[in-house]
Image 1 (tube, rainbow, N blue to C red):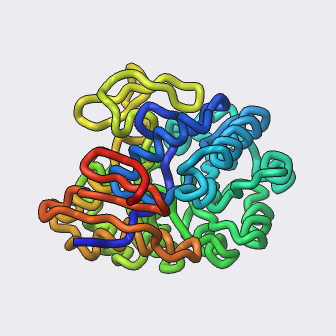
Image 2: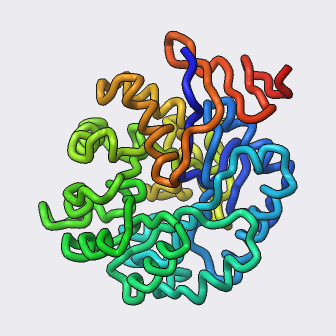
Length: 337
């Protein structure tokens, strides 16, 4: 069967390549994007996480230059996702992001860090409870940037206010939260209940237990649910140690990625085609519904139509994928005939 391509709104790295590396080269980016095409992804938002202003500016400049000079970047990269640095630094909310680099929301910082970028920021994740968040939300919305809540301790009133200002998404809902929360009055319930928010979900069976994922997608509905990978350099790569935004991370055989010696998750090793298969295997959605969450719904959030095409086998493996003149077929990428 043939479908449109998949669209990953949150991918930090892939196939041994870290998009948060200030030394990112066009060749490295092409290597990662070619591996993503093999998973049916034809469009994506390389995601940069919290860093100091100097590091963030350097990393943005590097990925921008790599996209412009690469073969696949202009075809597959729809823009950038900036996840931080305006997040909640409290334990549990920060996740693997460096809490010391988190700062109060400031539009001027974004003006400085993004000045001159050709590949613009299309998605911004922040914690709306932080002082100054309203100004950043207005700054982003005025520039057509999709704004999401993530790594946030935002109650129902703050979530509703943020949605009223134009926030339209929750980043990896259910994650970036402490293990212990008030039973019902908490950021997870507040975002689930807010119908103006579309939720991103990491369907790897590690970030969210399957029953919880099923319940959350039921609550949001398929039209307000998006599959993302939150992939890092350990995705589509053997288990082992990798780099991520200046940190060491360990990709395990069970598919989890963690900071060394701890329980803290550091992105995922998930591929987006596997996320689609997982939803079908777990009886959360049929193929049409799961595909929409990984293609049409995320593209629509950015005002785009799904791009490219993917041919699937009967067991939902990617047989071929194409974007522009570039084709993946049976493990081989190259020019279309």
